[in-house]
Length: 178
Image 1: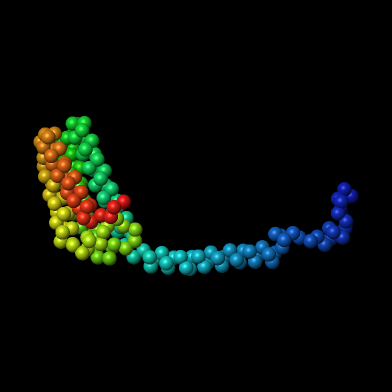
Image 2: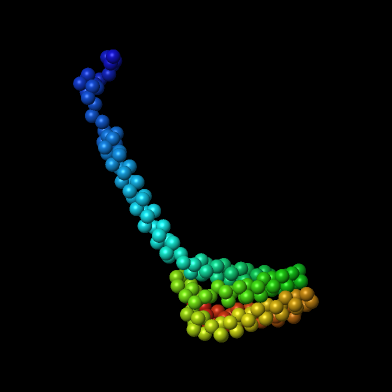
């Protein structure tokens, strides 16, 4: 039954001592530990994530994305002005900025200053002023949209500066320094 070349005795072969990792009780114990750990993590972290995610972090993220989109539009306008190419297309960029300005007011509900945000509390303390600055941006962008159709580089540049100034005025008052 056993090979003669086997160096283990019949006693060792008939009663082998399994290594620790092969013992069913140890393997089962480790598996139970992993299952309980996983169950604990799932049970604790999912409710925390649900409670912590009451819409505020998402709205802050949406605000940041909106501001980044407006910055990209402004950069594209600047590039078109410098290149003096496709100036009429600036109207589309300006329209996007104007629409973003309208959306911007909806992204600052009371209590959305929680978490990591670049917004100063003065937005909510001086809401009327924040609305006025946003309206100024929207009006400047609307004017740029209309002027872009003329393809007059000088007039477009002047109105672009007005849009940039509207952005900067709001940021000075209502945005944290980076």
